[in-house]
Length: 251
Length: 251
DNA sequence: CGAATGCTTGATATGGTTCAAATCCCGTGG
DNA sequence: CCACGGGATTTGAACCATATCAAGCATTCG
Image 1 (cartoon, rainbow over the protein chains, first blue to last red):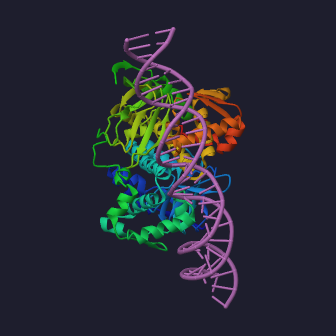
Image 2 (cartoon, chains in turn yellow, red, orange, green):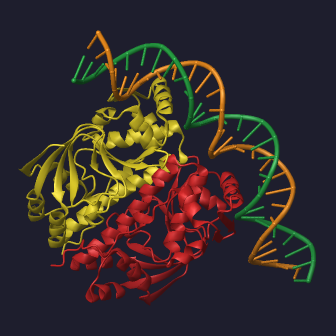
Image 3 (cartoon, rainbow over the protein chains, first blue to last red):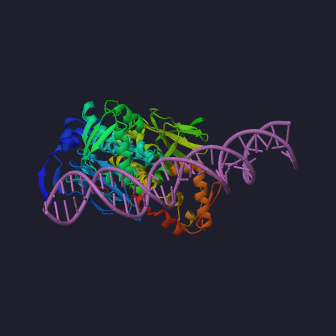
């Protein structure tokens, strides 16, 4: 895990926040000028160990990160996936004692931001506090969907839902959903869907034979988006927190 | 759904908040004086319908409330349970478009608090904003545990975990965990654990025959707390957000 | 080129579901 | 106080979606 100091590169974070919340120029500047520390993490290394108390949050700049829960018998369950632009543990600002581990699925570049700094701007600018809170609530909405997915859907439907979600989160435009890079092994997919890697393999085969998606290594090719959506009963509404709604008191 | 206006009774909410966050007397007063509207909801009625946009949050005063996700084939999955003292949808302050329904499992008394009022005190008192955020993050931690529970544990273990969680949340003192009132039908338990009501019944039978817990109607009697904890791999840490830690900048 | 890691497939086992029916429980009205 | 009705619980039998075990193949990387 190599480190180096730097100032900014928080652009992707700002962009993410502004999809969901309005910021004034001043607020934007406050975020941009947060001091950060760049950290590289190799695949399968923890960014945050289980039970560790951290004093910083991790903005993913490049790579893919998972939050892992574990069973006594060593079975792992991914409870969240974080892609570039996500502040993977923004919640730790307010609850610094981790209850699960954060692990890199691929080599990952992270910007560490100190809790104290985040808390300071949240206290100074109520709109930033609200934006952080809102961002965390989108993650919670995803979590809630995962409970439904894992609790009540069969294997094919689960995979379809996960693929729709990741496609939607990665995509900037509609077309991008049909072809994207998903750097997860079949074991990772199994850990995210609560299945076995063997069964993930068979499920992907079935989806391929249905002509819906083809996954080759990290490359996902969606042939029939509509069928994938209907298989996974996917409704992207939960991923949004529309900034355009007048939720914010402009006082 | 009967309504009546009232002022305060927010004591249980204050108490809940203060377990996790420090408040000054002034901040406490700001919360106590929030205008509320008392609402009674009968069992199996929605407090918030699927997709409904609300302008208030619901503090549970009496009863039990579940958040329900649903599958196309009508299978239901409970993604959260809320007991008295919980502000069931505090998150809606920041994301008012519901992505799942809130339904009463028993006759429930609710205090409705307007988003605008909550947002106003959150903006005025950064410590309150932080406390609200923290409260939501405890709910998210529970959600995260549920994903692990439903994704990777077998039926007996799932039930044990759920029972430990509810016991811990209901209990004020240690002894109270051994005997408590859980107003859920076996179908509700099934919806919360991602099982079938038939299998819940068999699982409860097995737990009873093991001499671990006996559930008769709404009455839960825990005979061997330690075995229940170890069966469910339960670690109460995730339920806490220790207010005693100096997380708050006292500036 | 060899070792490690990930992918694929077959055979078998099993935990949980589904369907169906009986019984229990409790509130309600006669 | 009893009869009735409807939800909730309990149990059995058959079935199936997914797990488990095991082996061979493919790909990447040092």
